[in-house]
Image (cartoon, rainbow, N blue to C red; front, top):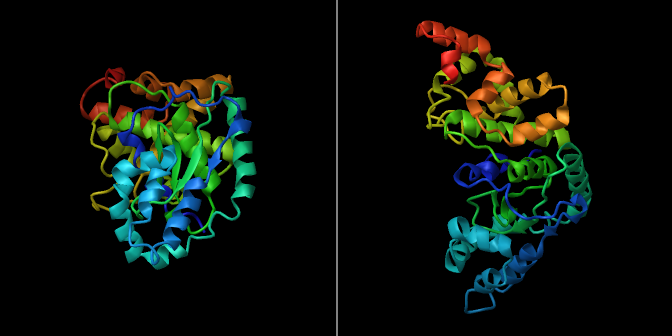
Length: 309
């Protein structure tokens, strides 16, 4: 069974700056899995019925950089965490042993890191923090590292592909005007390269829907891609039809894939995908939406090339 928090995990990325400038290790074997926060959470949890004070104060005070980063918009403070833990005590207990098999996943993730090192020698490798929050976020990418909301885990299925996706966000330095196209290239690029290095797809449902409704979606996307509004494509829908969330991941993936397949030097292509400077020019070079752009421009009585200006 796939992790239920997959979509939640990447939700915060669009609100954050690009992380490609951080000074993490460039050695894939240095990948750090930090579980100390999870251990401290359970120490606090076991004190709930024995202490008159809030035991989660200590959990936050002793917290790693991951807990500190997760506190601002998710944990909020020790009191808010305490309230949720008391209310959902049984749900937290279900996750008490979820990290027991983490060692086997570490080996897999290190192999994924090494694969990225081959494709992108300039890659940096952030630490991965397993923390406990308030059931409001499966995790995020932050300047401190990849942070996993452990209480959202039912098991570790799919976590390797998920970490691969977030790892790519750390490498990205995509610039240009903020528009739907740019954000889709970010997320689709993370999916594409993440899948390349891990062999795992984390958004199979939306990808299946995209393939089944390709023409309709491509026509709509061409009319929307220059706008800054990403509703119906990323992180939420208007419910105007039966589409799933995050079709922008699929669209970005297909554009990236088309570009990648056209390039003779595949390693150079990965570098270019991670460092897109002009999203519209990249789209034009990919050729993926050419047919739909020609149709759209014809309806407006404008030239094909004018679309990319």
